[in-house]
Length: 199
Ligand SMILES: Nc1nc2c(ncn2[C@@H]2O[C@H](COP(=O)(O)OP(=O)(O)OP(=O)(O)O)[C@@H](O)[C@H]2O)c(=O)[nH]1
Ligand SMILES: [Mg+2]
Figure 1 (cartoon, protein in one colour):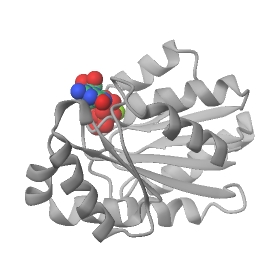
Figure 2: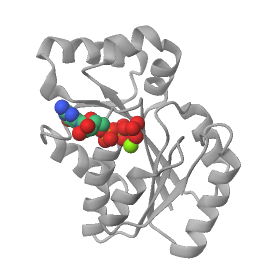
Figure 3: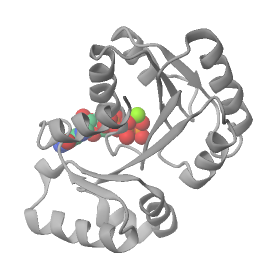
């Protein structure tokens, strides 16, 4: 299976984007599975996604980058045995260290054949989060294959340019998209690109 990891700080729009990509992959048709990691006990996201008819597995009570990394490995094995999906989409918690998640999923070869890391940046809170959580936010950006600057419907063009400049500096190899998932601004090309790469 190919893996698409949709990471990014709490509330940056991970689940909203995940749903868009999942719907598109299902329509291809492409067999997909979703792994949701929630720190709390109640999987609101998972319940919502299941209502959309998607195959969802949940990991609760800890973070897949640390305490639940072994559980992620056995979950991927289970998903492979039960569904043999072409693509599995993972949403880590907003506090997950993506480097540790990458190390874990890379250890899952040959089940996992390809890994793509998308990192969402919340344009409305970028400055504040960057100042408060520099190591987490910068590592998330540095490891990404694609950085998605989300919620551009709520900020000025000059803000977007500043974030883009930072992102380019932190990770010159990443593709960068500035979008609004909710208002569907620049969403289509990004989803198309992702779906294309996951074929
Ligand atoms: N204005 C605006 N709001 C957005 C956009 N995308 C998502 N949101 C809102 O941001 C909030 C968080 O979105 P989610 O998709 O749940 O974010 P998340 O990263 O999955 O959140 P957690 O899983 O709790 O970390 C929701 O209220 C969304 O409606 C956007 O493009 N613009
Ligand atoms: Mg979410």
